[in-house]
Image (cartoon, rainbow, N blue to C red; front, side):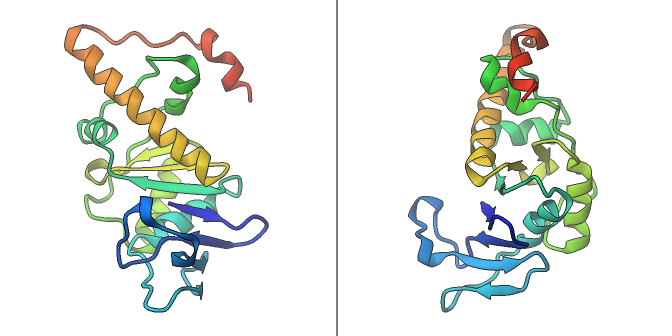
Length: 184
């Protein structure tokens, strides 16, 4: 996860060595500019391999204040299969999968260089999420909380899609019932 420092071209991101997200405290975070230069970091911190995945999305999307890269099971399964996650449960949560997530197919490798990350950002466009094929998902939001909430809601939608597919056809929630959220 990363967060843009409001009004700047700087982000806060968790460095390596790896620490579980539930154990991260503010003193562990590093500040980068959008070119990957370290502005501030704790002693011994190493820039994360996928820093450019975050920064290229921020560059492409001035409206984005938070980026979350996940390896969540259900969304990743749909990305591997190239199947769209449909809005199937609870209109407010279903908005997390609208518009449908594009699929980054240029590489199956971890996105570690600026050129790859730029293609991810271009592929993502204005969507709130993007399948990284076999390497999980990336989500964006107005802030890091919104990006994380979208990831959580998308995972639930993907699981419900999978379960519905086991017993029949998926029925999407009609746009009429999601209109209030879509008009925001």
